Amino acid sequence: MIKPASKFLHVSSLLASRARPSYCKTLLVKAFSCFFLFLSFAVAHAQSTKTLNTSPLAQADFRTSHMPYTAFDKLSHTILKIENVTLKVGFAPGKLDLSNQQILNWITNSAEVVSKYYGQFPVNNARVLIVPAQGKGVKTGQAFGYRGAAVRVFVGEKSNLNDLKKDWIAIHEMIHLALPNTHQRHLWLAEGLSVYVESIARVQAGQLSETFIWNGFMKSMPFGLPKSGDKGLDYTHTWGRTYWGGAIFCLLTDIEIRKQTNNKMGLQDALIGLIKKGGNNERIWSISEILEATDYATGKKAVYEQYMKMYNTPIKPDLKKLWKDLGIKKVDGKIVLDNNAPLAKIRQAIIAPRKQS
Image (cartoon, rainbow, N blue to C red; front, side):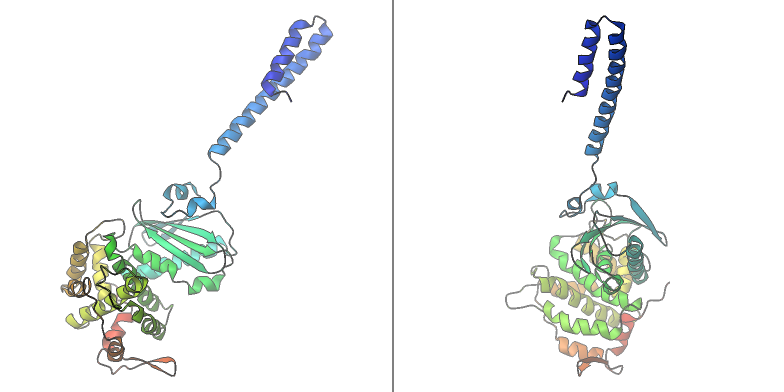
């Protein structure tokens, strides 16, 4: 096949070699036809080149180890307004049985749970990336902050509304936005806070019952206890110590703050104070700055003191005694709450919705 440009030149040379008008007329028409054909091919080639340079994003572009900020910004977005907070939600390529609106409602509800716990959303603006994944249910998520607060959540393509209703991952990741980035050895604090706060926040929002979360804590917090050879939380980075060891720290700190303030304040107040001091995951703070900001909010040193006890020493609290003192026990497989226990009022205060100031 003759390429468009060479075909045009070939017909032009024929025009020069023919003398008869009929030939000239016929070949002139052909020449113009080929010329316009050449132009159409050239335009089509330019358009195809342009399309190639801005080709549709593939799902692999959104499965990077880091937050794919550049790819995200090329997506079309839906803007969610929650009070004074703007969430920019984008959907990576892929199919979901759930509608976009159902996903957006879930993201809105999750953000409202977090906002209710902290009295505000941890940041003013955040990106939320939804990535379709194989299977059913919300699979996993991550929070990022180095180019602006962002959350990425992988949602199974066969998920339904009940899967979203049961989900804890979106709230867990949004809670990460409330803690400044700090040294990697303090990862247990970030994960422990998200585990602990997610449970408390969902009770305060009416999503979970009190007995449900205490049952979960009784079942899982033993995973966070130190084992033979373990060191303090800063120096033992196993799954159990990172997530549930961090959660134990949060519970003990919450109780200690309440003891020192006659049950008027708790860890929730300390974390709210952290945000008011400008602490969130868009900032890089030292652990000292985090401890100082949280303790400043309560006027006590409970967070610092608990950190000093656990950061380099494998503290092993007596969880069975702790549950008893809080008035939590299991009878015939069910959680029973004793409101006459020594720390029952503290237990009740921990899960009670905080009055807005």
